Image (tube, rainbow, N blue to C red; front, side):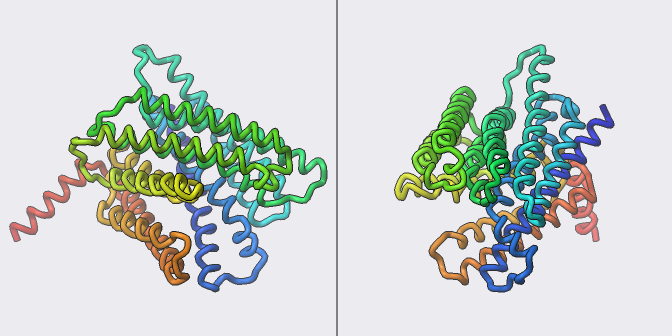
Length: 412
């Protein structure tokens, strides 16, 4: 089991590295394009064209589903690792190959097929671990909100990814030229995954200080997963292949999916605020990111109600807040590892400012400043995680070292 644990950690960090590289390449290409500094090379053009697919398929799924499912989920279930570590490792290799083929090759149908296969392998390992832990559990303890979010998001992908693979396979067999809007049509399921895992992490962050009905949370998340998945798949089958290549044909089902996701996010936010009312909430670093996720998503569903759009773009930014909330919660409180809080807070401040400046309709200077702040936020994150991994000390040991250093300064 020690070998499995080390291998599982390596695979989990591999998923995180893939998500970071995809976000840096996709976000960097967009920022340089807005600034007019993007070079006119074939590789850079491929990055610009693949921006949406990189952010949807190679940031959200590897980070929220695969990385957290590999690094955090076993500990939340009281296990030492996933039950199928080799299958998970194969999924990481296939997903990295899919990213390379998507950006730097003309074999885009192959990239889509590889991504679909890798995602299915990863979520099968995650679901097998959840069900196996339930079978071994003697006390039948209730799952935490994070476990429910991971399990429901994996179920959504298990239901929708084969549909994407079938559409791509049919297009390849028919000799149809690949259109990148094929991957854009998968935005609704990815947004649903962000919603499920994001709220799971948010409720997990506040579990010790906020009293909420876990049954109500699980019911809302389960209904959102079931309804949105069925509506999306039905819309794809009704519109055929053209409905995926031309998402406008899926406007009715797509709006239904976003409306259902909006309603679910509203109700989940109401449950969280009702529990937080008159509760003492300590502004820990993970709580800052959790509140940021709630603010971004709330802004999105308000815009969805008023203008019939906005939730999808808000969930894209909400993904970043959910990822960093989960990372700091997992690293600091689940693993009891120290990280520099000053850099984590600086990252949160710069990310929040960048999100505000990225609102559509603002001048181009604001967009450029937003890109610069996103880069600064990424640098703060790399420094914080680099120092945490290099020192690799517990929170208590770091606090004792800090008290000792301050005592020595006072004595001098």
